[in-house]
Image (cartoon, rainbow, N blue to C red; front, side, top):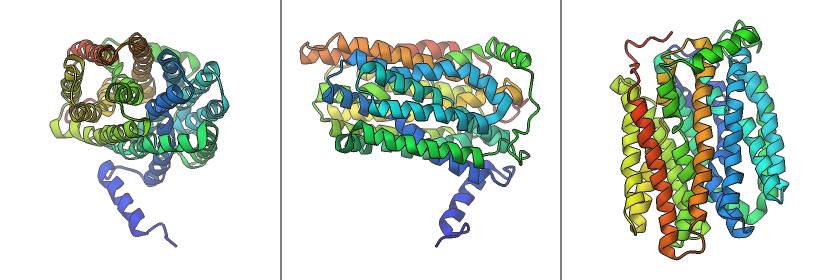
Length: 437
């Protein structure tokens, strides 16, 4: 029987101590391990869109626009919850918010498990989005409270990269095999039970700050009017507007391609089976969450946040433009471009750290909520438009179908070019010498 000082736990403890620095308070490891395990379950829902899309299209005969609406509803709902959740996170803390919103996700998972129609599946995904839409923000706020400012990006990148990566891997081939063997009802029923268990565990274990010993949040609460006024001031801050605009692409490009349409693309253009395409998606997910860990320390290594983000955008464009402009790419080349694109996509931790440099700590939740709002609205828009582009070529010859997917790549690239150009005008906030408010 392993004790708390077993070699495996000691190794994990040393890893987190190295990443968080000597300023991390006792108890942080326990909280981050719990949040990491929880994120594994969350990411199965967030990252499994491509597998679910292929399953719904091949077994139930749903059209691309219907699948786009079902999958996109989760991100639209996540966008809707961002601003009120940002206010409530700053007032009540991650512990209460995460454990409460989790219950909404449980209801959505149960509905999604048993729904047999497009409206039912859409509502289920929307409730999952309401419940799980702020999990990354919750992890980021815990890191802000528990570790030194110059280690926040590294810590969040590591937790999201490791735990999210495991969940994302499970959302590829394992999810495809599980859905094929057991169906939607049992698969998502089990996920609902796990989510319920995590809701209780978060409420009992998580503490918002190192001084929050009794779970009472540990911060002086603003009045509702002060909270709303602070939200408006953060949302309308001209210094932050270019960051918010760049935030519209912190997750939308990957979730539009790797999270939804890459599976159908590989099936329709390269004639891969659902299981074969799921292996490619698995590699893309591994690359994505390796990217999170790679981005984490970059702001400290290069002493810049702005140019780390813009470098990532440029690398994403170098992958998307060949996919969009060059017809009949060989399958290995297309797969390599998709995988590199996935690795370069997760610049959120660096962008969030850049945003943090402009706001005081008691308003970080609202600032991150604004980034998430922009990003998740754009996920819904891009996924929906991509569905229209793909369906416009349904029933046509093979070349026309391939052209529909190329238009999707071109659309995502165009959005990255515009948002990156606007973001390039923002003032940098380097790690060394940054104003940490």
